[in-house]
Every structure is written in structure tokens, then in C-alpha cells.
Length: 298
Image (cartoon, rainbow, N blue to C red):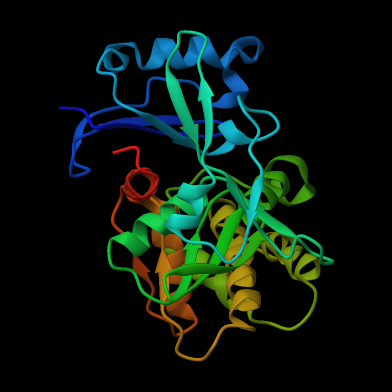
């Protein structure tokens, strides 16, 4: 029996799960569209089409991610830190679809809203809540991506947040800057990646060191197929170097992510002498289930 329909609806992706009474996955789909691909912003139709086989169950629906942003279906407020699953459950925003289905949207999170550098996230907070529910303790939770999130957890609460535009910067430099002109095909080079991580430890401005992705190639010391990995290592390494400057010594680090990117961050942390744990997949749905349970939807 389906107890909950959980949706992780992002800018370019859509993932949903039909969950049983204990949070077990009964069915899963990625057939929907990310919010930027929904024609004319008709989220009602996109929702009904993607989840048509499940909606007849009458199970409550909970959703998180950029679907709750200004460009999404229903804009929800940012909930200030510190927060936990109970706080997110108490701030759920209800909505009824055009087809009459009741949904509950998870709010985003904001740190230091009145300060000089406020920071926000939408969707990543549910993944952190999922890892906490799975037994994750105090420490740093890193969520790599286009905009990497560094989340500090203490006493079961999300208490700190920092965003680094590493993935987006890599894409811009590779596709739209002179650094990408010499990049050639190749199988990928872990040695070049770790060389870039090592370069991130050198003093000086990041944008000055980034030019070495071109100058090393011009000097014949970096092969065309190695340039992208070197640049990736440099940017990820710089993110980690800066993030660790304010982290307590011996802090526990958990990476919440999938595939090669999570593995890259793990290798980069190891280069800094830190053994990072990669969380199991499914933390987003685990977090949505926990919030729904706390909110009385299940």
C-alpha cells in the first residue's frame, strides 16, 4: 500500500517515489521534466502526467526542490537556521492541484538573512535531514553540484550553510573562456585531477592559478586530454581549502551525492588528509519521508 508519494523536483530533473508505510520504495520514476523544461510553466499538467499511475491511491504528496522557487509551481518562504525535520514539517505549504490532488511543499532554508552574505538552499535540506534520520551525526555535510552546499549539523539540527559555485564556474570556464580552447578528448586522468587539487593549495588568487590550465598546456606539461581534469581538481580543491579554513580540527565529513562527482570530492578530501564518508543513495526520499512523518501526513 502506498503511504506517501515523495517528489524531488529540481531545475533540470524530476524524481519521484511511491513509498510504503515504513518508507520502503514501492515504485520510482524519473519520467517527469525539470522545472525549466515544463512547457509554459504548466506544472499541474506535468504533475498529473508524470504521476498518473500513482495518484489514484489517494496517498499524500510531498515535494521539495526548485519546484518551490520563484520559477517553480508554488514559491515557499525560506526557513531560517537552525532547523530540523520538525521545523520543516511545521512549515509545510499546502496546495491543491488543478486535478484536486493535495500536495505539501517543503520550504527552503536560509542562513544569516539579515547579514552581509545570506545563503539559501532548496531541496538539499531534505537530503541532510535524510542522512540525520539514517543516523548521521554532527559534522560537515557536503552536497556537490552546480552550486555545492556545505552544511553544518550539530545536535540533529542544520546550523550552518555555505554555497560554492564550483560546478557552474567549471562549466563556464570550460565552455566560454580561453581555458577551454586547448581541451582535447581523453579518457580522463585521475593524476591530472589530483595535480589540480595540489595546485589549489598554492598561495595566490584562484583566478591567477586557473590560468595555469592553459599555460601548462602551452608549455607541453599538460596534455589536451588532461586539462579538464586538472581544472576540475583546481576548482574543487580551492572549494575544499576555503571550506576547511573555518572547520574544527578533526571534523567529520560526509558527502551526499551520486556517481563520479561524489567520488571526486572524496579523493580531493583525501588529498587534504581527510577521510570523507559518502552517504548511501536515497537521502532525499528518506528526508521527505521523515518530514512527512513529523508533519502528520503518514
